[in-house]
Amino acid sequence: MKQTYFVTGALGCIGAWVVKQLLERGDVPVVFDLGGDPRRIRDLLGEAGLAKVRFVQGDITELESVKRAVLEAKPHALVHLAGLQVPFCKADPALGARVNVLGTIHVFEAALAAGLARVVYASSAAVLGPSEDDEHPADEHAPCEPVTHYGVYKRANEGTARIYWLDKKLSSVGLRPLTVYGVGRDQGLTSGPTSAMKAAVLGRPFHIGFSGPTDFHYVADTAAAFLACADRGPAGAHVFNLHGDTLDVAEFVRAIEAELPAARGTLTHGGPRIPIPPRLDGSAIDEAVPGLVHTSVASGVRETLARLRVLAERGALDARDLA
Ligand SMILES: NC(=O)c1ccc[n+]([C@@H]2O[C@H](COP(=O)([O-])OP(=O)(O)OC[C@H]3O[C@@H](n4cnc5c(N)ncnc54)[C@H](O)[C@@H]3O)[C@@H](O)[C@H]2O)c1
Image 1 (cartoon, rainbow, N blue to C red):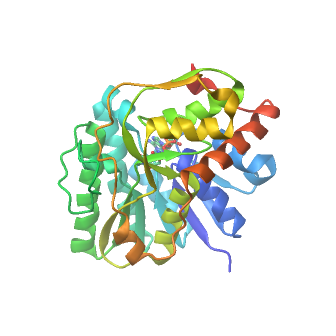
Image 2 (spheres, rainbow, N blue to C red):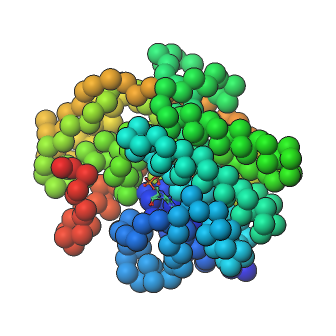
């Protein structure tokens, strides 16, 4: 039977893939987002796919809009992805708090009003803060000392989720991705590796503005993890790290060059490491929600380049992030 999934922020990168996967399995996505530009969904699904999606234009900072939209959609499940990423929170911390913190409270209130069993929401590995430990993967017990407003807000949301469980018995799963890459990833602290792939396809040079190792997560796997938790997450308030492949940015560039030899020498990287442990321990989610997909960086890069090439051939590759 078709089920309706209410997805906030689904005009964004991860959300577009959640929408794609829902449509592919015959479910109905209801997209709640501030923006009116569905380009990331169109890039994945074309106009025909886009036409099957129900859109509600709304602002997560307005409680009544969120509540009304959820009550009208009568969803089977809710995935909350709307948020402002690290640079946007840095530029406007007050707006960042309204969207990321207050917005998340509104989602929990709406879920309660609609009698939903669970909220699945995007936290982030940024809650953990910097680490030079490249050997030991950070698990969910690692200390949280974020050094960005964004990380602080995401950590607050994990607390919010815990309190909704304690006070109201509303279950939740918060997922902590790190460097998500793939078609649609065009903004945020760690979008450089995807922009580099886009540049490579267009035959343009690109500089990735950070260095060192990080945990790369293919966006299709990230989206699938959110849906798996929406479908079969455990009761209670849970937070899980997501682990993909940990490698140095230099190795990621080599993976692009291996697929697209013409890009050799055109992609550079440099700058500080990102202030997040480079290797996450994903064993807790593997145990709680078994059977998650894991795409290697080699395959994820190959698939991304193939999709980007098709978009470029159609003249439909949005390259604004390369400026
Ligand atoms: N991409 C990553 O590497 C990554 C890593 C860790 C956590 N996350 C988190 O996952 C979530 C999704 O990430 P993404 O890469 O798809 O982000 P994105 O920036 O591509 O998309 C975010 C979406 O939220 C929407 N939004 C912003 N403010 C809103 C508001 N006031 N009301 C309604 N919608 C609003 C935007 O319009 C956008 O479509 C975010 O919460 C992000 O913080 C992402």
